[in-house]
Image (cartoon, rainbow, N blue to C red; front, top):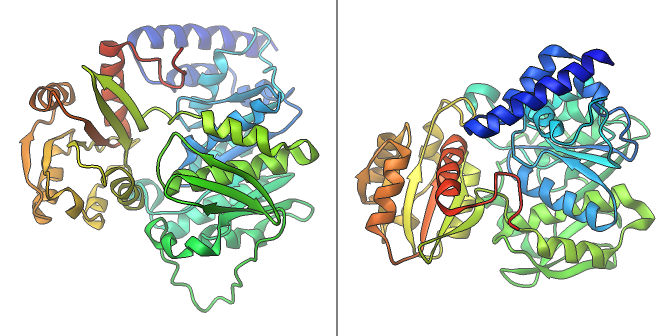
Length: 433
C-alpha cells in the first residue's frame, strides 16, 4: 500500500512536470511502474464492471473513444486512456490524473486501447474480462515482423480474456482466433453486411492460407453487421433489430466499421441494459480523435490532420479524405512509435494526389516521401524536413484554401502540439469546451 501511494505521488509529480514541458505521455507511467512494479494490478483491483482491452492494427483510438462514449451514455463511469499512448506505461500515465493517493481507481469499467504487443504485458498483470480485436495488417515491420506474428499476439490476448471476446467476422486473421478462446468465454462478432462485402479488400490484408481447413463463421443474432444507406448514413444490424440510422462526425467506411465494433462490444457488455437509441445518440456526438480526421480552423480555413501508419491505413485515408481536392502536406517520421522501416510507402498508390500535387513533404523521411511520390508522377513543391518550418511554409503558400496533412504518429503529435499552442486547441485526449 505504501509503495503504491509513493508511486502515485511520484507519478503525479512527473505527470505535472511532463505536461508543463510538453513531454511524452508515457514518462509518468514509467516513474510509477519503477516504484511499484505491481501498479496496474493494484490500481485496477476495484474496477468491478469489466476491464476491456481494444487491440488490433488499425482503428484502436477511434473505436475506444466510441465505445467509451456509448458506455457513459448508459450511465457508467468509465476509465480510458484518451491520449492514444497505447503502451502499458501510457495507460498508467492516464490513470495518474484520476487516482486518489491510495492508488485504487474508482470506475465501473475500464476501456483501454493497447498496442498488440503491450496488450500481452498488460494481460500478464491484469487479465482482461473482455477483448475487442479489430484487424491485422502490416504495421511497424521492425517491431511486429509479418502479419502472422501480429495475429498470434492477438490470439494470445484472447486466450487470456476471462469473459467475452469480440472478433472481426470479415478478417480471417482475427475470426479464426475463435478456436483459441477458452471454454465458457463468449465469442461475438462484428462485420459488414453482404451488400458491401466487395469493399473489404480496400481495408484488409489478403489471407492466402487456403489449405488449413478453416471455415469462416456465420453471423448470428448477437453479432453486429454494418449496413450503410449511403456514404455517410448507416445502421448496425443485430438479427432483426437495428441501431440507427445514424451519421458520424468522422467520415469513411473505416469509421463506420469502428462504430459497428464499438456497438457490438457495448451490447455484449451491457446485456439487457443496452439501449439502441442511447447508443445512436452517443455515436452521433463523438468527434474525431486528435489527428484522426481532426479539423483545426487556421485563419478561417480548415486544416485536417490525418494519421497514417501502414499501407492499409494510408490507402483508406486517401480514399476517404483524398477525394476532396485540397492543399496537401505529408509528414513522415521513422521514430520507434512510427516504425523504423518506411518501405511500406511503396505499397500505397498516390495517384489520387497527382492532379493537385503535394505542397510540402516533411519529417525525418521527407526526402524519402518526395522520392516515393515522384515514382507516381506526383509533383512536390517543397521538401522541408523540420516540421515547424514545413508547417509555416505550408500555411503561407496556401492561405485561402482548405488544407490537409497526412502524418505518421510522432509527426502528428509534434504538429498537433504546435497547432495547439498557436490556436488554443484542447490538450490531446481532451474535448473542446
